[in-house]
Length: 107
Ligand code: HEM
Image (tube, rainbow, N blue to C red):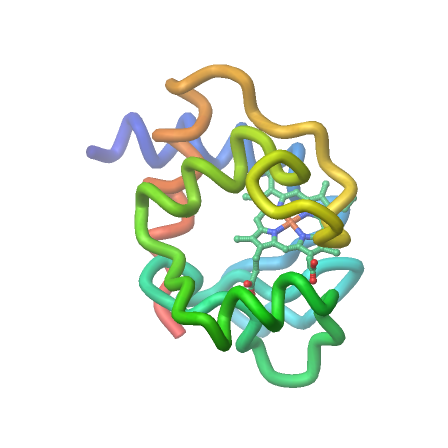
């Protein structure tokens, strides 16, 4: 849905201070997010994750739509002590939109 993706691009402005996505995206304060939908947590090469994020990935967490939705709604509630300093997206429509946007970027 191109309108949802366009809305997600706007929501991503809240993320862009820390995350890059798209051609040539590099790790920054947060990991680069190309290919994040469907990727095991904590596995972007060269990024220094927190222990809880590494443990979650080792334990089998994969960033499906539903897991991303849970994490992005309430990062610290979903994963205590992870190091993403972000309050979370409170609107379901913002969550849906940003996940749709991220899903347009492959590896
Ligand atoms: C981790 C998305 C906002 C900093 C992550 C991960 C995702 C994500 C999916 C897990 C990555 C992985 O497992 O490889 C988003 C989205 C945002 C957002 C969609 C906006 C809605 C932010 C902001 C910051 C930030 C504003 C900085 C203030 C980080 C950091 C991590 C992370 C440092 C690593 C967490 C850890 O290792 O515990 N983010 N993020 N993010 N994000 Fe964000």
